[in-house]
Image (tube, rainbow, N blue to C red; front, side, top):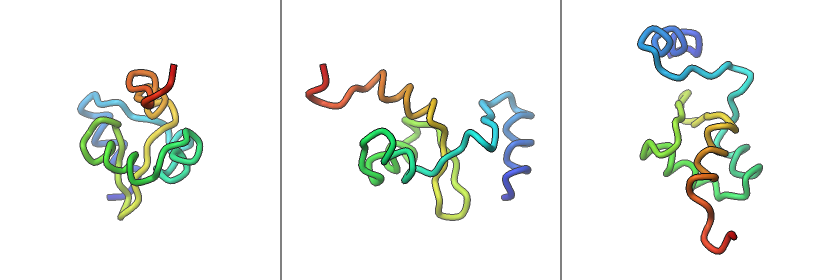
Length: 78
């Protein structure tokens, strides 16, 4: 589906709808937050982080990854 169609569908059912300029790829956010890309991809696929796919590319927002990080700190972080 095209990005615009996704936003119309999700907003019509009252789901969280980020702005297009807030989206970043899992790879970009993994580098930003110090996670492996594969780990964030697994979190997205399992639904632990709200994310969307466009073709084979997973995208989400920095705020959603940050919320996950705050609720699930890395082992050893104090």
